[in-house]
Structure formats: C-alpha cells, structure tokens
Amino acid sequence: MRTIYLIKYSEIGVKGKNRYVFEDALVRQIQKTMDRVEPDTYEVRRTQGRIFIDVPDDHIPPFDGDDEIKALQKVFGIAGICPVVSIEDTGFEDLGKAVVAYMQRTYGNEKHTFKVFARRARKDYPMESPEICVEVGAKIIESCPNLTVDVHDPEISVNVEVRERIFIYSKIIPGLGGMPIGTGGKAMLLLSGGIDSPVAGYMIAKRGVSLEAVYFHAPPYTSERAKQKVVDLAKKISIYTGPIKLHVINFTDIQLAIYEKCPHDELTIIMRRYMMRIAETIAKQTDCLGLVTGESIGQVASQTMKSLMCTNEVCDLPVYRPLIAFDKQDIVEVSEKIDTFETSILPFEDCCTIFVAKHPVTKPNVEVIRKHEKNLSDVIDALYEKALAEDEIIEVG
Ligand code: ATP
Ligand code: MG
Image 1 (tube, rainbow, N blue to C red):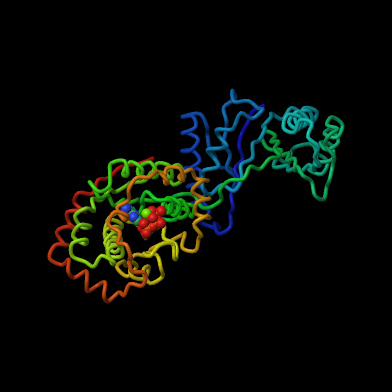
Image 2: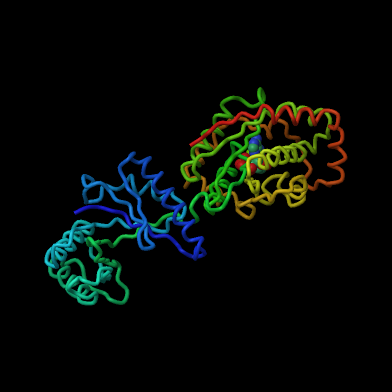
C-alpha cells in the first residue's frame, strides 16, 4: 500500500496547445513546492491528462500528509487535491479488503451516505466497472454499519480506479484555483508596507502572472525596519507567487524636491506620479507587461477616480488594480488568509504618510498638476537617473 496525491485542475480555457503550457507550468510549480516540503522525496508526474505526486513508501497511510496538503493548497492552478491509496492488483478479494480498510480508517464511526464510482483504465481487468461498484459497495455495507448507500446524492464518493495499480480515494481537498505561475507573463508590483499591495500582488499572481516588485524607500524619514517589513511581505507572498526580485528605490531626494517646489496639497498625487513613472521605467527594462497597485476607488484622497486618472496618465503600460472595487474589509480578509495582515499592520512609517498634506486634493486637475510638476524641471532628470542607478535589488523567495 502506498500513498499518492491526485491533482485535479480546472481545464477551462486551457484547451489545445495551451493545455500543455498550463500542465507543464503546474507540474513545475508542484515539484518546487514539494521539494520545499522535503527535498528529493516526491515525484510529480503527468499521465493521461492527470497529475500525480508519488509519495515514498515510508510515508504510509493513514495520511500524515498535512504538510504536503498545506503546501499544495498554496499552488495556483490546483482545483483539488485527492489523497489516494494505491495498492497492487492482487485480485478482487484484496481490493475489497483495501477499500473497507480505507473507509474505516478515513471515516471511523462517522455516519455517512456513500456511492462507489469505478473506472477501469485497464480493460484486461476481469470485472467491468458496474460490477466493481456493486461488489465493492456490498463489502463496505457489510463491514461498516455507519455507512449507507445513496446513489442519488451521496455524501461520500468512493472512487476505485483500476490502472497498473489500483487507486482508492474519496476526499477532494479544495485547492486555490487560478492559473499556474508563469503562464501569464510578468508584472511589476508597487509594493508598500501596507495591507493592500501584497493582496493585489497575490491576486494578480493567481491568474498565472509572475512578479517583480518595487518599493520606494525614503531614508532617513523611513527606517530600515520599514524596508525590512516590505522584504518580509514580499517573502510571504512569494510562497504563492514564486521568487520575487524586489527593487528598492531611494525616493528621498525626489520627495524632498517635490516638497520644496510643489503645492503641499498636491504632494501625494505628484509623488504617486513619480512612483508610477519610475516603476514603469524598471518594468520596461525587465520585460514586465504591466504595473500592479493596491489601489481601490475612494479609499484615500489619492484614490478617487480623478486622482487615479491623474496618476494613470503618466504610464503607457497597463496598470492593473485588482482591488479597485474591493471594500477594505474584503481586502483585510484576503490578507489574513495569505498571512500578510499581521506584518502589514506593524506600525512602521510609510514614505507617503510622512510627507502627506493636511488637506490633500481629492479632485486634482491634470493640467494644474502638470504645470506644477514643471517647477521640478531643473532638478528632476538628475534625481530620476540617480534613483534608478542606485536601485538595490533584493531576491526574495
Ligand atoms: P497599501 O496598503 O498597499 O500601502 P494604501 O492604502 O496605503 O495601500 P497608498 O499609500 O495610497 O494606499 O498607495 C496606493 C498604492 O501605491 C499601494 O497599494 C502601492 O501599490 C503603491 N505604493 C504606495 N506607497 C508605495 C511605496 N512606498 N512603495 C511602493 N509602492 C507604493
Ligand atoms: Mg500605503
């Protein structure tokens, strides 16, 4: 007897050639994930349009697979994880016994209804599928008084698959869904230390997009601890998104110049425009196909539709804002689920809050903003170049 995992994935939208790209990426992600659980232990393979993970023989049932399952529940592209008992085909008598043992071990004395589903992938097996269903069902009833048959709406679907070996499984543990990382290109995430941007990164990555990230740091106004918090957040989301190259841009001089030369009620919006410009420059240099932010309409003054229009107009690349219509509470829920919340709420200063005006404009006029940005024209090019030249790259995950 041996344990394996059968991985179910949604095939919607992955027909034809795309399907192989999807499956190969998923197999790669699963292998990486399992190697993190225990190196050189698990073998991930794809046969007949299904993905299996072989677990070594000494990892015997009852499933001690908590670590494996928890790790697999963080892989985008998996719809469900089925822990499977795999036995050698030594005749129907043994098959029946194995199914009964499996049911007793898995459900104990719990009361449930069940139905057996049999599949014969190997046609030389001496019984046909309907016969296997009936016979296996009878054995379960005989030995498990707590289980009764319901062929219309069973609580438990007991699957028996006759292949080279025989597979027995009944549980489908839900996965995250989404698309495997790497199937959707790469985007540049503007990652701050707040609650929203890590969630935005997670969500875009769920569609198969891999990430680079940029953080605007303003020492000495923002501390090393604030920067470390962003590195920690990148680490947390990299469990889902795969490795992230984090660009730390020293933004202090640009911020000071804006502070000195532009109207204070426009500081945030002008600052945001420079963040977008710099992020886009790096994105273009690193083959990113878009920018990602954690903005949500109306959350703060710089996120009204007028303000968003104003920050948006400095970019040619598409700006993806997965949280645009989310309420804060919904964002918080995701951040708790992906375990970034506790880090995000640590009270380290943010470069936006230090230079923030008492009454920031909520309806910036693009023409006016452009005009005021001209105040920076004699210094900004040099500052912009310097900030990019001093890009500190931290590899995370
Ligand atoms: P968050 O919780 O993500 O920090 P927020 O509600 O604090 O968002 P803002 O500070 O207005 O909102 O920032 C809006 C978006 O701009 C952020 O979600 C993030 O994508 C980006 N951003 C803001 N500050 C920074 C920064 N210092 N470095 C990188 N990106 C930033
Ligand atoms: Mg913020």
